[in-house]
Length: 128
Image (cartoon, rainbow, N blue to C red; front, side):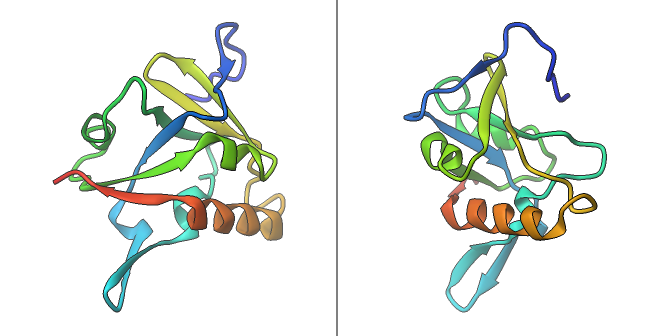
């Protein structure tokens, strides 16, 4: 699903918002608040990018439906993602990718740093 060689791929505008369907283990309850864990933004071994949905094409509920039993999505501002040196590229009307993250096996310090920055930037949206 990386789509890195698709000719129609385009960089999203800095003003755009994207959603990432959140797995339950990526959000932790700390006292009265929910906290996004950096794991939400770590590449899995088979991935070259992270899947996100452009908010101008997909609702939070539609994004959540991409995972079974998903009750939350994470929203990110594309400009803030780009400000840490990453790219957000649309490869379809309803799908985009966050590119530029290293794998933990290649660069664990940088992978953790970038995942932590994205987790701090992201906001939780409840869909149920």
